Length: 403
Image 1 (cartoon, rainbow, N blue to C red):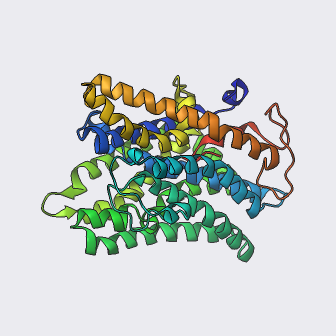
Image 2: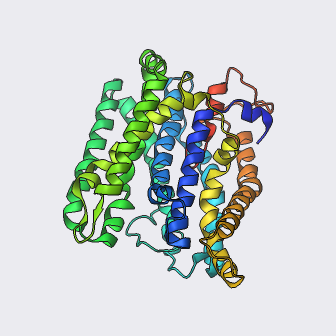
Image 3: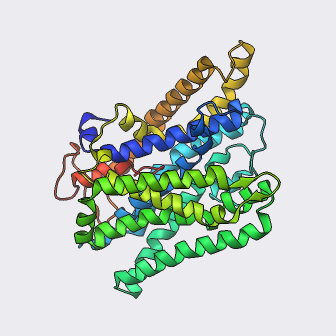
């Protein structure tokens, strides 16, 4: 990551993305390493980092598609899919190969059939405790990347009205709430089936990407309203934080009850409420007068850039380290054990980013620099021009699988 690239980043987006990957690491550490809340309440709510990634990805991809639709140039589905493949597949294939070639990386857990990973359908009928289970969120995003641009172009061609897009988006969010309510009736009392049928399911979680898409629609199709909302960045930030706290309160206290199972209200509405709260934080991160936009946290930009590689690499690395740490008398619950695990994860993520991700990103930027049908080559300086603006460059690492 060059100094020039860093100069065009948005601090708030880097902060959110860095927070998301740290939350995921703290949650996973509790679930499959220490089996205790090593980071206090952050260990309990860390799973929400994935939900934050969903919202950020929805904004990123939506902004790419809608800004292209607003342009005089022609948006190319083929080029879009090629760019996504070059972005997401190399890292994924390397970690997938590690899981299948080195059983120790699986931590003794069963591995889902290879064809499910290759087709990005691993999250369907996924059992908790499976090896490389954290790929479920990548499946949801890949399915989203496949469907969203096609639907957007179809709606655009069949109805030139932006209103139709808003009606569809709101309808889909309501449909997800209804579907989770329906599914809950049969699996709410069974923890395993709940995860298989609701938590990992694309049909029950896709709506968490839609608040991010809504932000992209607001920005590209309602610029006056977008500017008005941006002028209230502090209010948006405080509203997002308040709604986050409410969401976490619901999930901590009213999600699961011993002897009763998962509760209906939080199952049906909790994920939607959480996603909307993260969308408000994303809006604040894009608002120049908000603290989230203005605050630059040292290291956040690096974590944001490495986060996709770090997300993929941390679990197999931690699985491999559990046994040697235990044999050498270093408890995984100790400060030393936690530090070793996290440093190793950061190093593994950085190496994956540097050796695999970066070369393919350079290849993509050389041959497919934009999503337009007849893309022009971006100048090697990466300086803003009439083709690429600083804003687009700044948004280039918003979601889990960054642009």
